[in-house]
Length: 296
Image (cartoon, rainbow, N blue to C red):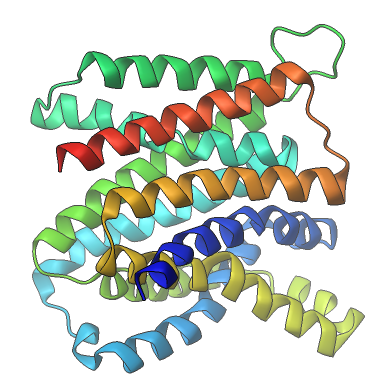
């Protein structure tokens, strides 16, 4: 049974890595960023709610004092998705996913500033290696390739920043007795309601009218496979196997999946230096996760 739980974070990473395909397809068909997020989160509430009802209905209970942290998590999810979508639309999918995977660096920095947690020499080395890897992936050291937009790189870093804040906020909420599913379901409900005034339902109607059956299936698959299922799988894994092992498997699977999708679908072929930067960053993040695992 443990082997199944070890496969789940890999599947979650692969699914997260596929999100660029959905984002680019919807963007190319006239769906703006806020409408895209509304579609993703509103549809995702259904499988997440089913998962909660099958797991434990008590997870739907919240206290009034839980709302501030849940709202912070919701704001971080919106910021993360807006930045990540922008990054995936403007830079190679592998670079966008790799930039997102550097979130643990920001977690370390925030933990040092807010809680005075020590940054060891090994952690510092991992951080430097990851930054060097990202620089190689941007092609900044190569003159024979097309320049990658700075806006896309900035958006990718912003996504990692929001992801780091979300991780710290959700951890705080979990320490107070809340389950991951509870935090997530109420976060996306709040997000869906908040995004309604900014959602273009005419864009949705235009997209669905292209081929009602296929487009509706596409939207369901988009929300389920690039958001709901990855969170469900990663949560099940974290609850049944070591958290360090789970995070290591997922941190390697997502950028790898994004690299493969970008290569096969969009012909995003990395140069030798870019691929070396990709490997360097992933190895650095795995080493960082592994160190936290040993410490725990």
